[in-house]
Length: 123
Image 1 (cartoon, one colour):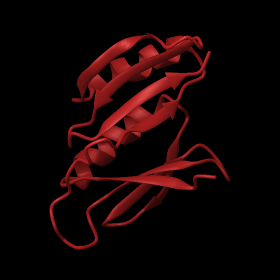
Image 2 (image 1 turned 180 degrees about the vertical axis):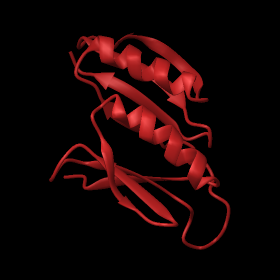
Image 3 (image 1 turned 60 degrees about the vertical axis):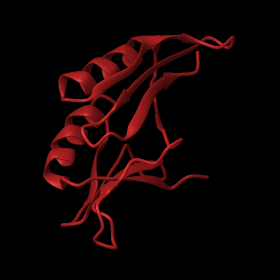
């Protein structure tokens, strides 16, 4: 259903370095790279993540209530992604751990631009 999700950045070079390393934890690679937008994916037909400088030329801003969830294969991968996000300059928004009653493990973080993401394993 989802082809890709886009989040904004004011420093595309910094965002590219951050997401190249972070998304490598999920086996993702760049699928498109221009002077304004970069997309990462894990394969044909799989949902992708894009980071871009806003088309209108205005500064990128963080959307209140907006969050991107990255699908992890295990609780251990959730912890690894969360740790990598912080190592690369992200900030902690909630340590990896169980959430809800369904056996989910989630770790929340923000990228260097302030965009909120999480790594999640559905259990």
